[in-house]
Image (cartoon, rainbow, N blue to C red; front, top):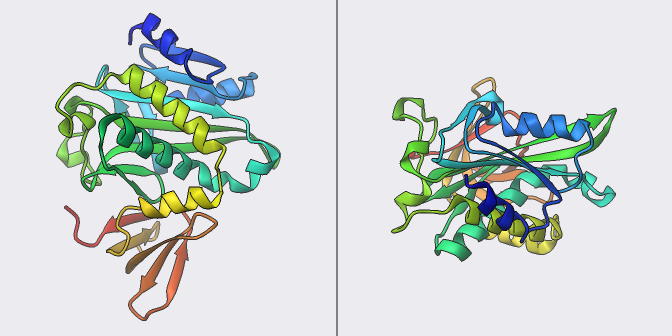
Length: 262
């Protein structure tokens, strides 16, 4: 990334401080360390390359130089936000969906609990982690990785879900710094709506696989099939089962897959 352009772009956001790394193991790990040493609210860690990035369940997320946008945003939750920690992943999803729609005319969907899809394929992953002091969350780290070019895509043999990148859906290259600035501003805007009726309405409206049959698997490989009804006020996924009953699923250690994957 060009550092002067990065500094100029971030000046148009509410970022209080930032750290840029040409290469780093994990922006989330760096952000968690920074929380412990006093990072202010809305501090940013951004890298051109990640060599040990992580997704859910410690899956590896590699960021090749120049191919993706990888960053972690540090928030200090207000008392009113502490009861809504499960909503910070969809907060990221809503902000990114809106950014991609506004800036590029795309129609992304939010795959519960933490991915953003284009044409049913994963283009972005979200990993939210918290720093704790006893039983109190002292900081929330919002880690976001967005596939920009084809070089960001893992080889087919390593994909657990169909993958895509922004430039497969656009006629022009994507400027990562411009995308970052717009996304940070939408994150700030959606943070102010966390847990509101508008928050849930937008999430429901853009929820991937709504009305479709999906499979939920837990860590024991127990499989449940149902039709996606939506999300409840806790952020759990609600499925309608074959017997007509509804069942809620917390994010936890579960995987969601469409019944007929692409």
